Image 1 (cartoon, protein in one colour):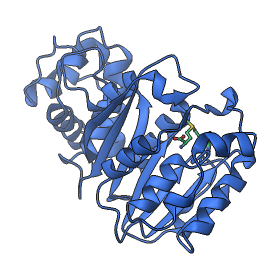
Image 2 (cartoon, rainbow, N blue to C red):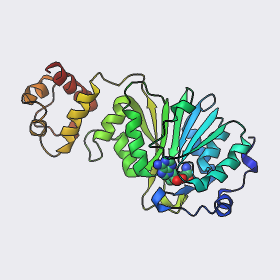
Image 3 (cartoon, rainbow, N blue to C red):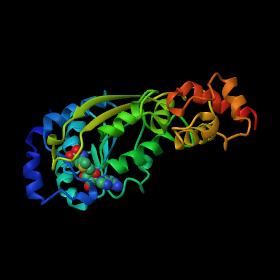
Image 4 (cartoon, rainbow, N blue to C red):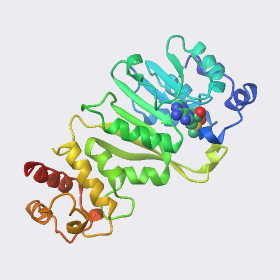
Length: 281
Ligand code: SAM
């Protein structure tokens, strides 16, 4: 593999560029290049794809993405201290790594990327969830990305892939699974990060569906799911009273028992309810 083998180990890079991890930026770095190569492979076949990486830090995952054959990597990093380390990687992969310094929440990467586009990131968890929700709720569908391969704190990963019937099941599961296939593809203990975070982590792989899994108006679905889970312990007939005075009729029409709680209702039934409510408007 050209380029990657003559780059220095990440510990050396961190020492050389004085990249003492900053808590305020959620910096828990992955230093094991075998592990970052494995995570890069979880993003699927990258040959012929542009990859958007958010938060490359010293570049462990970036190296993996380039080595697994990504056509180009666009990396957005908020911490300017990381730029020299990333420049060193860019020099070894001419024309294939572009780094933008800035806040991923404030930058539109699309002007720099060409389809097919895959996203890969090990991000601070709060930024990761916010970006995931944005990526799952664009104005138009299908989205700009074919797949997302994202590291989350394990509890958040479990909320993304959750099925009805448990505490983890809620808006995030419904949002993700309505528009994508989502699965946990790797679990990671705290010790593989430097410094180790307090929690376990997991990589979630999401593949965009060409169209949402079941028809529904996004605004109505979002409204009904939000109302249902805001009062998740209540029976749906009372949790959803504010949504429509005739909510019991709508629930019955689509085969949901009005005495059920949000946690017990699957995605298909929520979509049917959203359609029934929309038709009555
Ligand atoms: N990808 C590297 C790795 O796996 O070792 C670093 C991971 S570290 C958990 C998160 C990275 O995201 C840090 O480099 C941090 O500076 C960067 N970051 C934090 N907030 C960001 C934001 N809003 N936009 C872009 N990068 C951000």
